[in-house]
Image 1: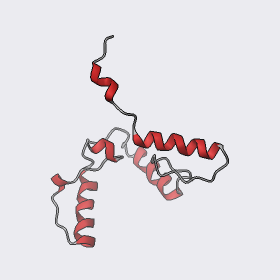
Image 2: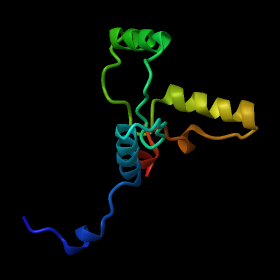
Image 3: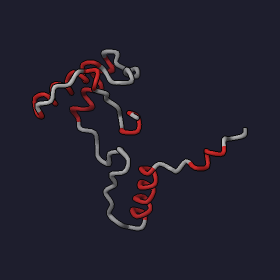
Amino acid sequence: MKLAQRITSIKPSATLTINTKAQELRAAGRQIVSLAVGEPDFRTPEHVCEAARQAMEQGFTRYTPVPGIPELRTAVCGYFRDFYGVDSAMDNVVVTNGGKQSL
């Protein structure tokens, strides 16, 4: 397969580069708290596990809509209204699992 020449100008993900460096430092014996990738280094709290079990039992086992489920987007609007005094329409809220996905 022939690739476009511009493919050579694509740089690696900064978060993956930082994560690789953190792993190297950790392997060298350094204590590192990496904030590069959203992969927790602690056990999932039990209440989160229980909520996940309940959601699966209720059939919530598929991908959600790209901008997020309406209930969560509405809750985000309420949070910003209550804590920051900012009124926002649900259509202005997108919930993703990371910054890259929202772009």
